[in-house]
Length: 581
Image (cartoon, rainbow, N blue to C red):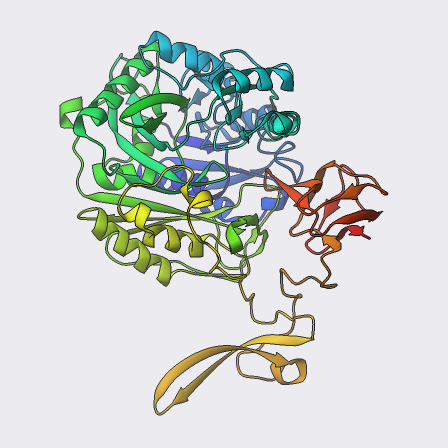
């Protein structure tokens, strides 16, 4: 086994890997950008080294810098986590050429499966059918239109080297093709460093079911059960569970066998995930993730296996100690991703900021994988995952109720989170009856009851009032209330602290003809000019925040009187974008 491992990542996954390494007596090396100098993953490792620059491109995506730190620190191996360089074949090759071990598949396998196009071809060769689509990169939007007219609308444009919903755009008509093609390319380039995209049929009502696999260097490959990841927004997962409800054992076995066949076809090493879309009793190959998956904790909870430990053992040259017949599962597990997003009205807008309070749930059957603590800042430069909350139950209903209890126990202040949306999903009839699909969160759920978070103590509103928490007793019973008090009262009231910032989500002008930025981010494109006529919902510009593109739309009909942004501008919440006359 290794003596020292460099973890080429940040946040909760870096902490997750460090924990297993510590249990095995392996020393860990963290890398960090300037923005992450005091981050929790830095504090969780034995050593830490700076990689210059505040952005992912100048830090966590700097392959040469990370390999140099590996050599300098004396680490024998590199664990890439997920995201960033985890599925970068060149990085894996650079690690190996520098004398280290890449804890993951061979570079050739990453290249084959890293492209969604070549992976579709490999899957077909392994006897696994993919979603009908084209297996060549798109050159322009006209090819999207031709495909849509051939198979019917809508169609999906996808990043060839992407995943996690980034670089995926749904096109409902020919008139949308040009804008969505350009947006998909921008996201693919920003998040994965490659602009190639392709097109495939968009299934109307599928479930997203994926199979966990592991393979060693001796030709052994196993499937460790499936996960249902159908609760999504923006094609990104919110809730995952295992086993998948309302899935027959026959289909489950066929999926597992297909996943193993694909793993053997591409000479797979380590842990990986084969993703499928499931509809009307049929499953279609979607993609293969050649890394540890975000939602791996639910598989660990039902199998009792430590997937990170198995990764390390395979990378160190050990043979798998289990056979397929020895893989057993017990009970049901559910994971909720807690992201720094404001789900008010179903918008799921990124919500970067400083976490003033983070108190996670506990108790029997509860697991927390957090990348932040109280006082830590969630940067707009990175993914907005704060923590993963996972629970185990005797059956699905037991796990569902336990998750609702755990979500109620969790307190996160300072940023908006997806917790209110998770509760609505878990209590919805489609989820309870397992009739939900990948579209149901955005298409079927009523999220209108979700209101903007009140903010943290010390927040002041437009009228100068201070948000204050006061504890009191009435007839011997304790009550805690939060009030908006006049500044002179709030400053001296019980539990009050000095004002810090204005409440988020408040429009200082209160006029639909004044367009402001809803969050911190960078302008990626501007779609109008001064003097242009616009109608309600026309796109004014596109703001990128946390690697997601967010269109800023007109809220009234009129003519653009002022335009205060250009491509590349960095904006804060409430900054003026445009004025409509």
